[in-house]
Length: 292
Image (cartoon, rainbow, N blue to C red):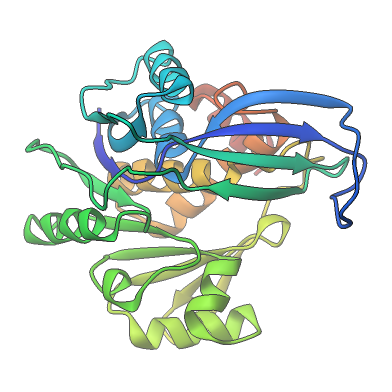
């Protein structure tokens, strides 16, 4: 079993199902509501556990109701919470998420309060590091440790991701929004080429139903997404990063890891919420077998 050290954000999601994404300053009526958990690091940890890996999650939460909910949910998933720091007097990060009939979502995130500026990293053996950019100091140190051990250091590069932290990673997997912000370009392929010239590691970008784009030498290569009827896209990118990290250390092949992650992300879009909608290893393998 491969161990992935994960450093980053844990969040509670208040999810509202609406007929269309709100755009006006008026009241909207939701047809359904779901209390879920989220955050790049925590969702990736749940995905890795369900896919057969051993996630070691380092994150910070408050000593409040939402912190209790996160800790309880992780323990129900069998994830070790020894390195989940509960900060006295702090407020846990919370998001309001609106999803429409096409599965698209709008997120308003409160990043929490008094959580500090870093995460304490455990002194353990691991096969790879996966970080987000929420606590840059800790993410930087985790990536440096991975580099020192000559192991993969992967960053979930959402907006904003600094050049300094991206340059420390062996693998930079951008969201579309994150890549456009990082590069200053308006086209994803141009943005990917621009980013790859500034970064020493492997570079990719996930673009939902359009698939995943990676740099292959000096050209952009596309790995198509799977054709599904999306119900809830919330957390799909985080599941993708967890699946990519695990499969990368299992096979050592980026493109195989991308295909595996695309399948895991697609299955998340079919299901609602986290952890309920997070696929298992068997589900991903059966899906890949049926969709060759």
